[in-house]
Length: 89
Image (cartoon, rainbow, N blue to C red; front, side, top):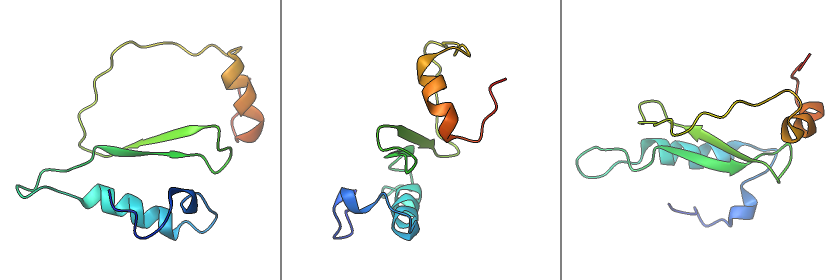
């Protein structure tokens, strides 16, 4: 994937134009036969850089390998809840 003359550390910022440009490139990139080169992107959350986010592009094949329920008392869920507009009650 091209870097557009920028370092990866330039991408997470409050001006989302660069982030959107990179995502658009990944979404529209195709090989000579027109097949998509990428199925999605992953990036660090702007809420907290310790969190990794995934965006899977529409039309991508996704295979569920092993479903794992998330319990309301899960420590990771509990640690993220105060930062997100989600009511866990």
